[in-house]
Amino acid sequence: GRRDGLRRAAAAAAAIGAWGGVQVVLSGAVPLASAQDEVFANNTDQLLSPLEEINVDKGIPPPREDWILLNETLPEPTERVWMEFEKRGVFLGRINITLYGKIVPKAADNFASLCRGDKGVSYENSTMFRVLRDINLQFGDIGDEGRGLRGRSSFGAPFARENFRIRHSVVGHNVVSMIRSGQPPYLLDSRFLITRNDIAEYADDRFVAVGRVTGGEETLATLDQVKTRGVGNRPRQPVRIRACGVYDDPVEPSLRSVYDETRAQERSKAKKDKETETESEFQAVPASSLQPILIDKKKLTEEDNRRQAELKAKKIQQKETVEKANRFGFFGITSDK
Image (cartoon, rainbow, N blue to C red; front, side, top):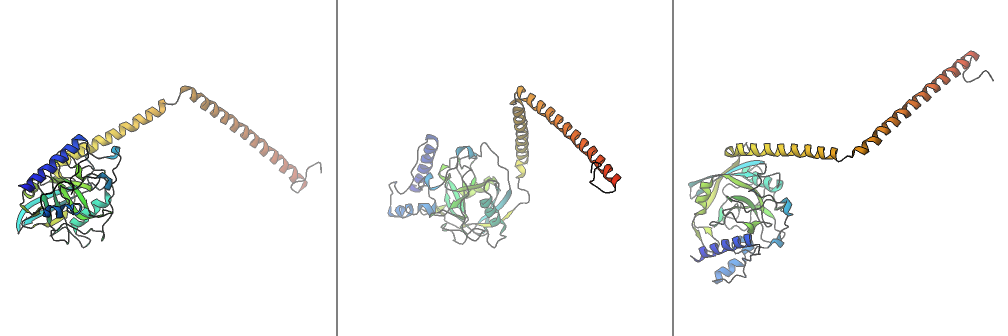
């Protein structure tokens, strides 16, 4: 009851902040109902609670013109991974995640490698450590057994956030984003979240979006309904990633035609822009400026003819000199000598 109320209040406040353009503070400054809540609020940055303060000063916002809004842009997929979930041995389903490695190459490479398990560390057997129903689901605390306080990257050590270009608010939600560590410099490891609400501005300029769930909505809906315990919203029964891997084809089959059409439109637009640019450059040259070019060419031709004539005359002179020298039996002696 009270926890559900907090969740709904947080989501509503986030929505108001998103559409009203005001800063929303969901932190320990909010009156807390119990000592247990106070302990939780003091660790909100690590736990990623809906009570967490929305503070863009902790990130480096990209220029607005560099934002990638998934409602408007379909980034080129670089890899597509899959994950299967279970609860106490019962299979819950599979999801597919498309990664956008051209935008965040290091974060996407880390995610794909953890799905392959090719560097000795894998998402396999790690947990879903937090369920914030209708807000987000949190996974991947490798080696932390469901506490969600740390993880392990495929690089052997946490790594810096690349950029915040992909924004988290999108119709249809299901954005996959790497969760930062709880202390500066806010590095990334293996922990990630999947948004479950179209309004997710709390994650912008804080966490690094790497992709989107492109298959398995039914599985996510099941995970979203998992019963939780305590203010940490941890599942009452452990939910684990029982297996994971990487597909050969980075494009979701059901979206193949959409991607092909998008790429064709991008190529057509690029070609048209290039033709327009070339045409503009040609039209930008005044007709009067073409005449001096013709005159210069004529001068160059005349200069070339003059030099050719001088060279020919010099060769004739050299030939005559050699002939005179040969008549005297040695080179360089003239008849006057």
